[in-house]
Length: 170
Image (cartoon, rainbow, N blue to C red; front, side, top):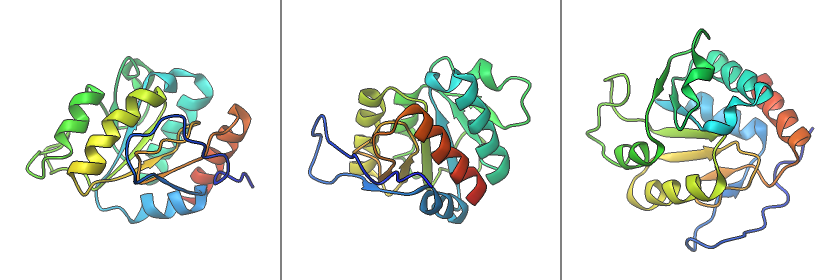
């Protein structure tokens, strides 16, 4: 079992409230209990190992995917509900309770982020943290302090193992 709650060193400070370190099991429970979860993936998800795990998460939990950056081609031909959207715009839209969502069924209550550049997703989540009630779970390799909950800073091998544990727990 990978300890994802250690090594949450802050390299920057965007506010006084920081993410609570979480385990794969707790993250899986929160994802399963969410009414309208959305998996938000970035360009780093095009790593074949990470892409495989993102697809498994989406399929096992029946979660739609918001493909940001240049990540959309990775989901073509996979059996997932993926749609392209700009990450900055998505961060703006999810703060609006009247936003119809990517599928027209309303906004999301929980976003799960994976495969992003740390400093960029941290800024986007700063907006969602401060201007909405949307919960965010960062299952990134780096600690994302503006998420509601986040894995700590992990090695690549530990990150893959943590994602495998999360998939198993879904």
